[in-house]
Length: 338
Image (cartoon, rainbow, N blue to C red; front, side):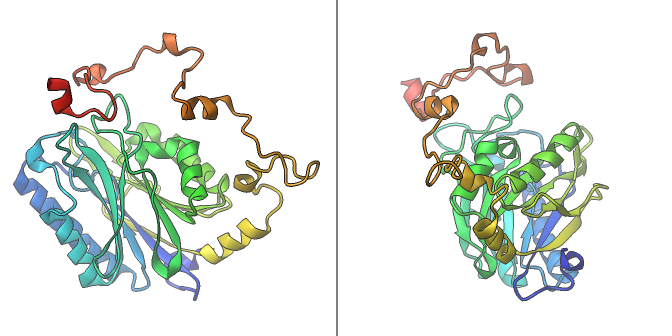
């Protein structure tokens, strides 16, 4: 039940709107300014569209499009004019907003970042994409972890970006840090449609967590993004789904974190995020609390290596026209030059 998309809002409900934004073409600073203004206008549309809406979410690449252009002139900063305009839009419309920013990085490639702003214009969450979509994307790997904040009505919010949601570990980390609602913004194109759907559902079900997910929509003459705004309940049920990919449509639903909290506390069967660390508690008191997973141990120790790793053929971005990188993670460009 989703309150007819949020029209019938309960006292405990939070109404979320997912904007299937038209895929833009942004090549110049003028283009960037115009696209910023369009997003500002759509924040206003969201408020007019649904008076009960608490949070409006824009997809990855909302400001910059899918060109993968790293031109410093059109990269943004968190304290720059584009973010300032988005903050003001939230103030003017008394609504929380989630936005995408390609962020300048003086030490290397730009970051693919996301922010959440409250209805008073305060920056509440700042995230950098952990898993750029290799080998297609040139962005620097994120270095801020997965922050979780207190959002509307005290709900715990996390944000992940696009390819991040294909890793069960990312959604699990968000939930482990307390997230009740995980936002997933994306620029995915049509070939990913099926995997997008089932990962959004599995991320929800496996963690007893609401997921709210949206892609860009339409075409820029080269790429065709799919829209696919989806809001999924903590049991994996789809509450709302924008399957037609209509551009600039806002997909809405009411979600109930209070019922999620009840499930996390009271479910026995399939309370998987609890049971991961309490294996077989029927047989042994408190369950086994060891780590039987080799990949977890190896990753933590810095020795993660697949058995078939020597056979992997694509290990950089050269197949998509990017140069072979010379820096190691954590190393700055100037350090390599020296």
